[in-house]
Length: 223
Ligand code: PGA
Image (cartoon, rainbow, N blue to C red; front, side, top):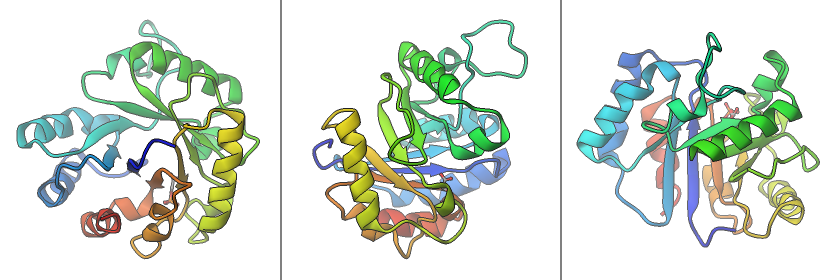
């Protein structure tokens, strides 16, 4: 585990216009303080990321930006895709292999591995989403997010104890200091239970990250 540093990553999925994204930042940004024990990341749409980056830089908000996916190809003639190397001005990391991408966009373990490699080569940290303790984890993975499918968007989160157990299995398969996050129906009401687990390095939050006040409350759970 990374010594004491927790991650809170917001995954906005296909939500929020540019204006709505900036309005969220306007509320959340001033409420966050610079901390060495907490890294906050927001993964908005590609649409909003450049505008958000400007506002974060101007106001020195302690927020990193990430993307929800990258192309499985390098920059080039790949219509509709955004390559990892095009994102490094604005993004620090990328999610890879989210179950919604596996279900709806034919993401495979092979494309996850290719994307993790391209991310590393470009200098983006890859947060590889795994659905269970046996999901393949590419060698280029920087962070693992354990997100059981039954917990995503269902209001039926895995227990903190089981998430810790799965995280330990994941570290056995990768390395002892691999950061492992939990995601799936994390809310302001249960975030603390995951954040306070020494065996978990943070949380990946979907729906509950969309509301600025709820996100502020989630961040306040780790003090
Ligand atoms: P949820 O989504 O918090 O809305 O369950 C989490 C995720 O899909 O990353």
